[in-house]
Image (cartoon, rainbow, N blue to C red):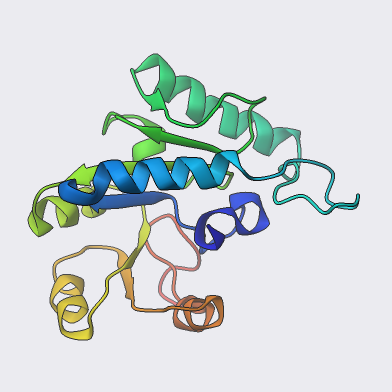
Length: 179
């Protein structure tokens, strides 16, 4: 939850896409949607402090709404309850050609994609404009890292570890390239 919704998803290291192997896909989606739907929305300076507040400005709000509108027009399925956009939302059946599947949203919207094989997951990661990839297992992470173009393979379990691992790296359209 923190990986996606910290700062309302407006973080350079926020998770955007979740790739789940088919045997665990449905259960992951159901549990993730339940957690998202239980989040409290509201003014971040009011008590009780909500889980999510508004996005930074009207321009960001419109950009997130545009991602959602394009994806829904293309047949994307919203798994979470419908609130006013942009608020937290989880989508499945996102076509590969829409921005929600390929670009950094920089907002409280998440997508989950099923995959059968590791090759399929790596192909999907390589087709995005930029991504961070969490790959468990040190040896497997090293092997996968060699096959991804533009991903930052990390095996971090805490926010501090993730920030330390990604502080000076920018890939494709994300961050400072070649720093």
